[in-house]
Figure 1 (cartoon, helix red, strand yellow):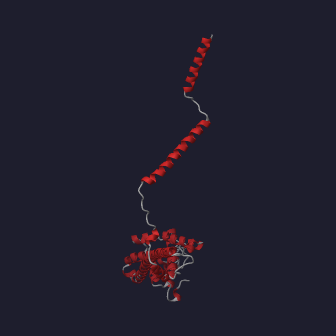
Figure 2 (cartoon, rainbow, N blue to C red; figure 1 turned 180 degrees about the horizontal axis):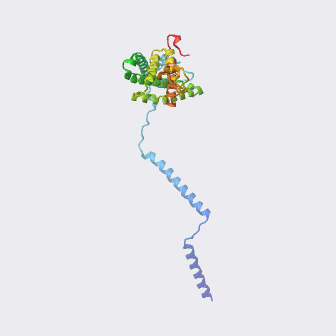
Figure 3 (spheres, helix red, strand yellow; figure 1 turned 45 degrees about the vertical axis):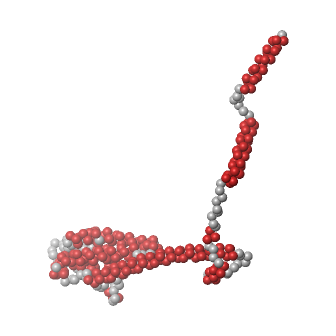
Length: 321
């Protein structure tokens, strides 16, 4: 019996030793935190030891001089520069070193201000140069336009001698006036352009330019009726001479004519009337012939109005009503 108990005790001890040596699958949270704390403590101790050892092993490196140490001048020179700048030679509680630093700061500020002013001066000079160039170009364009107006005046004698020469003269004269009208619209201030009246004026100019395209096409093809060519030549001639009253009379003869009978009436009844011979092609109005003619004849009157505004006559009696 005793031998059996001794055998059981030996077996139990063997089993306990095997279970204690076997690694456990799970660990308590307290054991994990304790192990992490021990590792952190040992690592900090190693870093502290390494920092204590490295300075003793590394050679000493001389420190770089401070920036203000390069500005090393005598007290007399410092006083002289401060007086030249109109600054006090010493502030309350200021040491010699602080005084030199104050002088250095003042000089750095002056250098920055000088660079800024020089940059502004360069920009201002460049801006003035651009303005001068634009002014010269503007003056040249004005002189050129004025010269063109004087040189390119249409000669009414060409109506009888060589009417074909009138086509290019009328074409370029009307084109030039239309271009001046467009430029005048662009040169207006922004608040004028954005107003209702300014928008209406711009729309009128664009509409007139569109209405004049058929007339320009007819002038290029030299297919304008002779009577209309004469009246338009008179309008352009008097407009160039700034005789707007006469130009307006030619416009009225072109638009409504001088017909003794109602506009467009050539035969009234079966028999020819006694006044029939007074009605000729140049006495019949062209404004009601078709819609295209009406539009560009109306645009001619708008060009007259603009030209009178831009180039007013010397004689007030030549103004249109």
